[in-house]
Length: 420
Image 1 (cartoon, helix red, strand yellow):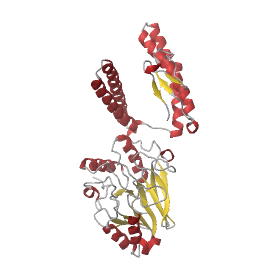
Image 2 (image 1 turned 45 degrees about the horizontal axis):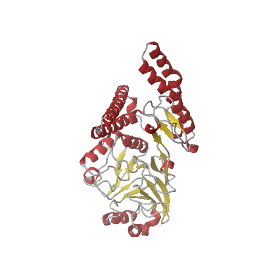
Image 3 (image 1 turned 45 degrees about the vertical axis):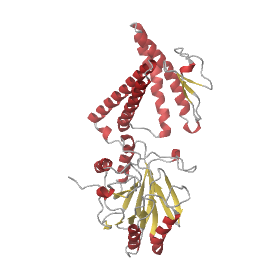
């Protein structure tokens, strides 16, 4: 057995020899520990592993059950590349201390100090504030990061502790205020840097949870998942925010045997998804809505299973480059593949297959045209899109035709997709 990565903190003050940098991950697990979200956390652990230690600034789990704590612990032990410390977030209820130890503690590295404070209940504990004052009073302590979960009042968001709580924190550090170089928090599924009480406040919540809009100035579309690196330059503590690519983790797809099994799992789950949706349509036509509803739910479940397996295999390009990357596949299908198989079906008198390939080829042509427009993501303002559920043909425009131009399906059955 190797050294455990997760540190169960038992001492209120720990000296860390040889530590000159720290990677920080925010909010990996509060929205659930599914594979889709945990891929980001896996990538964050790899990025934070470039530093000497890692600190997770809260919300490791969606709720504090042993099941969830064990799952995040197993994931972290398998993937972390350095020692991992944590602090308690508002989702980290229950048996947090059994897995991660003290809720208020200090780490004295070679050139900087981190003081971890618990404010998961939106108030700082007296024990933590007393520890902060004690550590700041130490002569050897010169550069301090004060870390907690819920932000203090700032210029960007209202989701923070009260002014009274911030006053309590300020009173604890005020005699040694010049030693406090950074305030560090999570909780908000985004990122921003502010100045509060003349000290930089770094808010990071991009380690797994889906990025969200937090204000008109901080939009999800402008923020990537990320890790914060703290490091020393000529004895001065600095930081850098490193964005994670959407292909931030790919260790498992490199195993050929596992990769094949994952491909098979994706195909199997998607086939089940299609089979269940098809049966739901049959049940609905017979007026058996409860049965149809059950099979739609089963189909949705199978889709999410497929998405989880596929997320391990997927190696996406940068977001703005991805749409254009789908075009060649659509063009190949309507120009070559479907045309060739349609000809085979016609030659051998298989009219249903011929019809299916003809309809699909017509739709793929429209897909390619729409994708080429959407590739200019910044300027694409969308249009109304209509999909014929009979043959799958895609139509655009302010008004849909009365009949599908491929199969003749009626307008009243079209699925409508409009941007609000």
